[in-house]
Image (cartoon, rainbow, N blue to C red):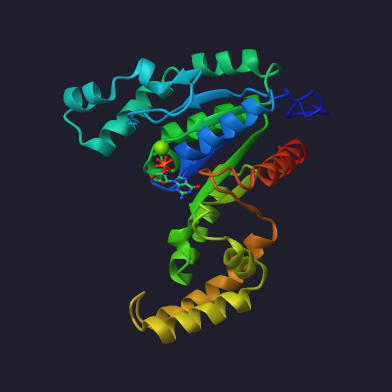
Amino acid sequence: PADPKGKGKQSPRATAMIVIGMAGSGKTTFMQRVNSYLHERNQPPYVLNLDPAVMHLPFDANIDIRDTVDYPEVMKQYNLGPNGGIMTALNLFTTKFDQVLSHVEKRANDVDYVLLDTPGQIEIFTWSASGSIITDALASALPTVVVYIIDTPRTTAPATFMSNMLYACSILYKTRLPFLVVFNKTDVQSHQFALEWMRDFEQFQDALLERRQTHGDEDGPAYQDSLMNSMSLVLDEFYKHLRAVGVSAMTGEGMDELFDAVQEARQEYEREY
Ligand code: GDP
Ligand code: MG
């Protein structure tokens, strides 16, 4: 066929943002901020909460996993701990995702953004069949962007930074979707250092050396530095194509830049997917 993927067809108006990040990085707070930012601009989003374990949701969700799956009951019934419970709750929800998607699709030309919050433990979403099914289903229905939230104050050590960026890289390759790194909590710690390390790997290597001199073996044995030096060369290639912005989900700083980057990522989706 001349147009195998139907690329000639017009994409829906809405852009979906899948919010992923380590537990505590600020996903839920970020969702709340983005939600209120969009409301203020008269662009109310369509919101999905996929975290079954959240006690209090600080924003209104159009679709909430907790409405269909009773997480404490799942743990009890299947004799599971917290993570097994979340995983199973997500699996149960995924069996109904075709219905969820039809709701989303109905609204995809009425809203500018569809927001999706994911469970606390990142691998439950990124490395599960359910996570892949949900991501792929959403991405085949509307332009979809992965928003990877990083806890900036907790990623200032070069070794931590590197492992976080490798994780980001792995999610990019797993989802193969337009990707945006969000350095959160800039009210506590500016993300300038991260931008510098990403722009120039020699600055990262200098920081690594300096950290070794000031902290000794605290971050691991010295031979790891040569591994990290090599790895920084590899990541350099990843960084070149990476969109990164700094925000504070707490204060709202950086929201305009965030949405510029989301729009750029949407354009990438329209070109590539
Ligand atoms: P989640 O587990 O990724 O959903 O993270 P939460 O949204 O629950 O946030 C974890 C903790 O980080 C909470 O105590 C938040 O108040 C805090 N937090 C989130 N975003 C920010 C931010 O931009 N600045 C500061 N200072 N704290 C934040
Ligand atoms: Mg959360």
